[in-house]
Image (cartoon, rainbow, N blue to C red):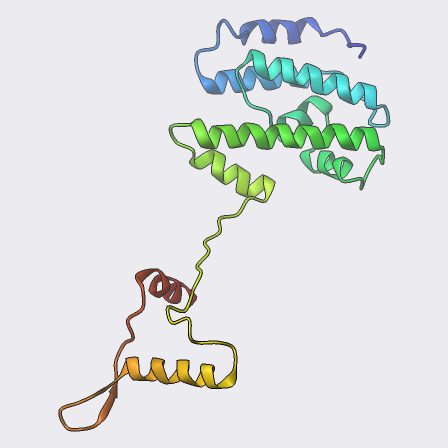
Length: 197
C-alpha cells in the first residue's frame, strides 16, 4: 500500500509520543491513535489496500501493546466502526474478499477478548465487551426430572402426579381442616421464581 508522506508536525508529535517516552497506558493509547490517524485514506473497493491497512494496523497496535478493536481500525481506515460492520456483512462495498477479511478481523477481536477474559486478573471488562460487541450471553439451565419413574405421559399418570403434589403441600391442622403449606422447592428454583416475579 503506498504511504502518503507524513508532515513534519505529525512526525514531531509522533516522536513526542514514541513508545520509549510513553509513561502511562493512556499515553500509549493516544500515541497509537495519533499514528493510526496518520495512515493514508484507502479505497474500500480495493481489497489489497484494506488488507495492507489491517496488516499495518496490527503492527502499530502491537508496538504499543494494545489489543485489536474495530473502533481503532476505523480510525486507521478513516471511517466509522458502523461502516466497517456494514462492509463486513455486505451492506456496503459488496466484495466477498473484503467481507472475509473483516470477518477474520472480527474473529481476531473476539479471540483477543476471550483470552483476556480467561487470563486477566479482572476479566469484567473483557466479559462486558464480549457481550456488548460479540453477542455473548450468560445462560443458566435447570433440568427438572421426576424422581418417581413410574409417572408417564398418559392422563392417569398426570393425575397421579398432581395428587402427589397436592398431598405434599396440603396438611391437616389440629382443628381437622386442610391447610396449604409452602412446598419443598430447591433454592435454585426459588431464586428463579423471585427473579421472574
